[in-house]
Length: 144
Ligand code: RB5
Image: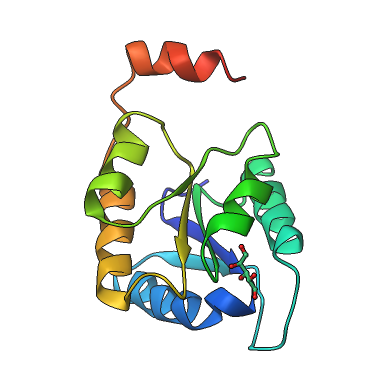
C-alpha cells in the first residue's frame, strides 16, 4: 500500500470540507480514495465511518480523514472499530499530538466547526508527523 493513498469520507455536514480537502491532497500528489458521501443530501454518518473502517482494515489506504458537521458523531462511530484510532481535532497542535502520542490513523474534523485553512493545517500536521512510540505504544497496546 502506498503511503500516498488517503481515504476521505463524511456525511452531508462535512461534504463541503471534504471537497476542499480532496483538492488540497490531490494538488500535493496524494491519491485520494473518496468513499462518499457525494452531495448535500442528508445521510447517516455511521455508514461512512463503517466504509472508512473497512478501507483501513483492507489496507486500501494508509490513513483516512472523516468529516461530519461537528466531527463528534463520526469520530464516535469510527472508534467502535478496534483497528481505527480516530482523532477529532480542532487545530494544528491537536492534529500533531494525535500522531505523536496516539498514532491516529484517521483524522476527524467538523465541517461546521472549523475553517478551511485551519482544517488544511491540521491535515498537513496529521500527514507529516510520525508516532513517537515508547510509552505511547504501551498505552495503545492496552486498548487493543
Ligand atoms: C448532521 O446534521 C449532523 O448531526 C452530523 O453531521 C454530525 O454533526 C453529528 O455528530
